[in-house]
Length: 199
Image (spheres, rainbow, N blue to C red):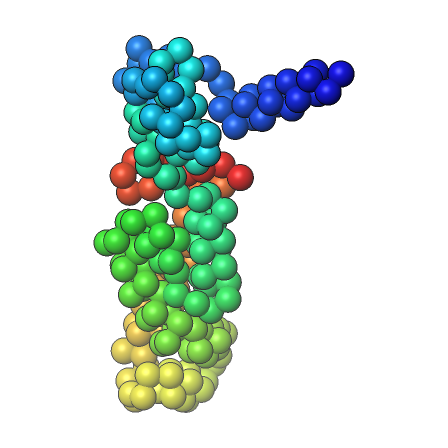
C-alpha cells in the first residue's frame, strides 16, 4: 500500500514540477530543456531538471538546454513594480531594474524621482491652480497660486509649468500601471527574453 502512495506522490510531484510535454524538434522549446543527458545530474539535479530518455526537461524555475539558467521570479517582479511606484509616492523602476531592463528602469527612476521630489508635493497645488484658472473670475487669485507654485510672477509661464508637471505625473502613473499589468498578464519577459517563473 505504501508503495502506491509513494508512486502517486512522485507522479504528482513530477507532473506539477515538469508541466506539459515539450517538443524538442521546435527550437523555441530549447529554453525548456532538450539538451542531451545521461543522468539527472547533467540537467542540474532534481531542482533544476530531470533526464528523461536522454533529454533534459527543466522545472519551471529554470531554463536552457541543460537547465542551467534560473528564471526571474514573477512574484518579486510584480511586488517591486506594484509596491515601488506612485501608489506609495515612490519612484517606479525597481521592477524593470530587477528584470535587467537597465535603460528603461533608469528612465522610470528619473521620471519617478522628478515626480516624487517635485511633482508629488505640488500636485495638489497644481490642481488648485488649474481649477482656479478654469472657474475663477479673479485674475489675482490665479496669479497668486501660480506664482506661489513656481516662484515667478507671470501666470502664463506658471500655468505651462503646472501643466508640464501634471503631464509628467500622468506619464509616470501610466508607465507604472502598464508594467504591473504586463507582469500579471505574462506579457513581460526578462531582458534576455526568458519567461518569468510562475507563482
